[in-house]
Amino acid sequence: MSSSADDCAVMVRVDESPASEAATLLDGGVVSLRRLDLDDLDSIIALSESLTESERYFRFFTAYPTYLKSWARSLAERSNKQFALGAFESGRLIGVASYFMCNEPGCAEVAIVVAHQEHMRGVGTVLLGRLGQIARQNGLDRFVADVLAENFLMRKVMSDAGWPCTIHADGSELRVDINLAELPQ
Image (cartoon, rainbow, N blue to C red; front, side, top):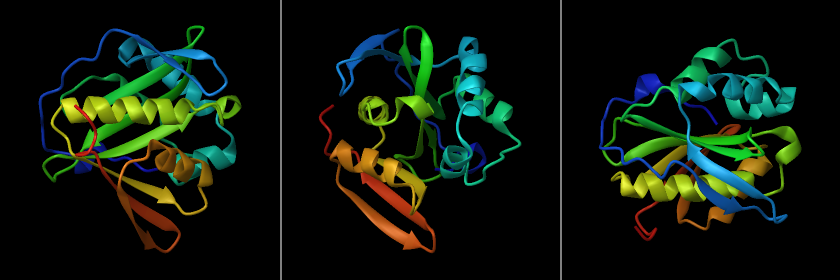
């Protein structure tokens, strides 16, 4: 899924989530979820560099993004225009879900990346669910995401979230519009 901070200018209040909270994965493993900050910069870069070529293509729409360090910094630098949530297992960052505010009030672009060896454990689903709750607490009612049509894992994560959404096809890309308004606050 692509993400562009340049397209995001609307600001809302951002409530801090607790320093860390536990979440249980499908395999019974427990991860710690917390908001990312500059202390996590090296872990975010390491996670992105550990992705396979196809995983980088699915996440960044290119197999060899040249901007990984600036992308990682945009996640680690806290602001009221974005929120990045990390999943940590035994102190290692294994997944990130983030949103960046869009120009449209109440709307943010959402993106998720999960370490290769952690797929199919529910990491992305747990991250997306918690990020949706945080977004609602911060006054958002919609997520949007651009997803490559062949990115079946990301489509499964969004489907597993169980939120009402609409999908618009545009060639090989899907524009997913997720209604967060029906989530309990």
